[in-house]
Image 1 (tube, rainbow, N blue to C red):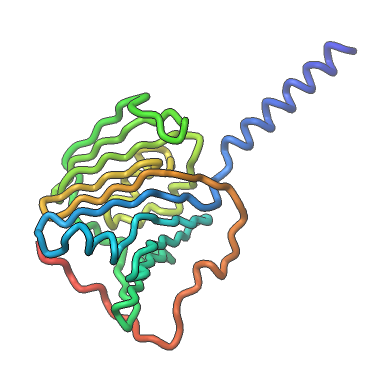
Image 2 (image 1 turned 180 degrees about the vertical axis):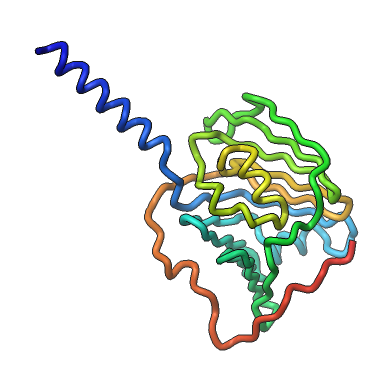
Length: 214
């Protein structure tokens, strides 16, 4: 009888642990943010002033929102295959269809135990694209349902998620000939997020995001 009871307890603990590990992350990831304009159009002090040095990333199921703490108050909100960007200096909400890729993947590789970020061991996904290179540091314990982002091809989001089985980046570097963007996790908090966090502005024009010159 004792053996049967012990077996039941062990089975319960196993199922509970497996269930927790399989849950999709909902919460806020705070990143240290760095951006470099290689064209010389923006100086380092201007980048820091306008973009700031911190990014908040709110995610819940199939939607997310990013906020930069610079003077421009730039936000990016993803809803239903569309990315909406607001900028204090622009009196409109700019949108882009995320089902259309910005470039193509040329090659990729994964290195296990490549770094430790916030005391978390991370693997590294390296991607070479037609635009530049990506370094995506991740731990499988912090993941989302990547099936909800299969059409988010913009900036290779769906590719990185699918290749890492839905793992969120704890560090991300995207470098092209014209710029270098780097975010590094400083805090990761699981919590319930209200749907209102992802509400879009009202009473303003919505315009298609202008194409960037390469």
